[in-house]
Length: 497
Ligand code: ADP
Image 1 (cartoon, rainbow, N blue to C red):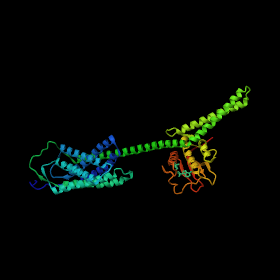
Image 2 (image 1 turned 45 degrees about the horizontal axis):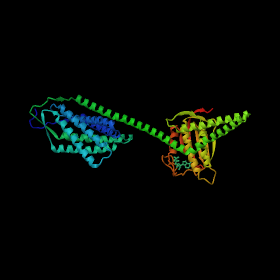
Image 3 (image 1 turned 135 degrees about the vertical axis):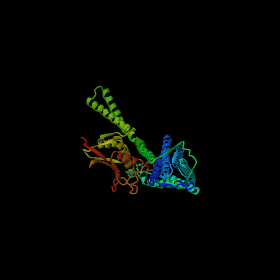
Image 4 (image 1 turned 60 degrees about the vertical axis):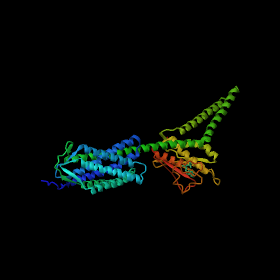
């Protein structure tokens, strides 16, 4: 028989206490993880993460409190009023939504964090005491107000720590999983400390008055396990979907970067074309002048009444040749200016070098540079984008021509070499200019690094990304006279016939 005024003595089921701490730690981990998603996304996606995230977190915090309460065994049957329990769940979800909004702000000042943690702490304490109010048992609940105050203070302090931790770890890189886990442990233990202090503040005195048990439900040990399993599942799904979403985001970013690189390559190509305008005009003008000369000659032959058929045939053949040459130059320029996804075909790199040499010939002559080709015979074919590889060669050659413009004490020479190299072909572009400053060698491949007053500094960085996207390597060779750039391109083993 229980005496009228003595408090009921309860005991804790250690397994269920451990379960409640595990749920608190899992909810904290999910919170840290979801905060990152809410911060990284915008618009509808952000709203979806906010609603989904706060529901998962709310269920986590709520389940932790109920399992903590269920772990406390009293010598009388305890039931729970489900509408009140539902209200406490709602408070938990609102509290989590508030926390996610606070930590996903761009900046967080001290005042903001203090106000945020006061609101959040009071919310968690409200959840806890509403949950206790849901208890239906033949006893009256009395509170030790010092312990109640301590539990609210703990909830506020814990919220402050949690908000800071969430704010700082929300967009940490992947390798921060351990740190996140550490923070989740700290946060989980703090939530548990708040709960068990709150629980210690209550004593139960047997009551004689009749109980209102209209909406009460009893929860067995099996029920506790069910709540725990379902909660862990919800938190697991939340963390998993956040992981999947992050992967998708990373992929989208990579795609956008690749697209931007393509756009940049196009812009650089047009800039290069600008530099080459004079050369192009010359390349087209030359065959056109020849066509006019030969055409006039043919007309005069015909007008003479007795044309020399052999000479006439030669003149017309030359007209056809020059016309073909001019149209080839034009189609090469069109290809160079065309934007589009890389077009990989099997090609002869020597042919690409020869085409580019024709395009830059005039520019080289104007700058007094003699161009020499040393191309290996029987090179294997490479799989590549003709236009992109032309662009790399043009960048290297124009850089060399520019580097030699001020040279007066020795001949301005440009040597373009191709050779077989293991399972790749090696292409070298060497000039007799002042060479590369050893202190700048590492930096010249960086985007926007330039030493020229009119330079853009994109040529080498784009060239390197093009070669690397072909599976090759572009680098400089130190210790050579002048500058020596070389690149490799993997081969498919078939030699050019
Ligand atoms: P930009 O030509 O617009 O300056 P690049 O990326 O093509 O940009 O080159 C970066 C820098 O590398 C150049 O400004 C120059 O200082 C150096 N550089 C490139 N090629 C040569 C070369 N052949 N000889 C000497 N310096 C070079």
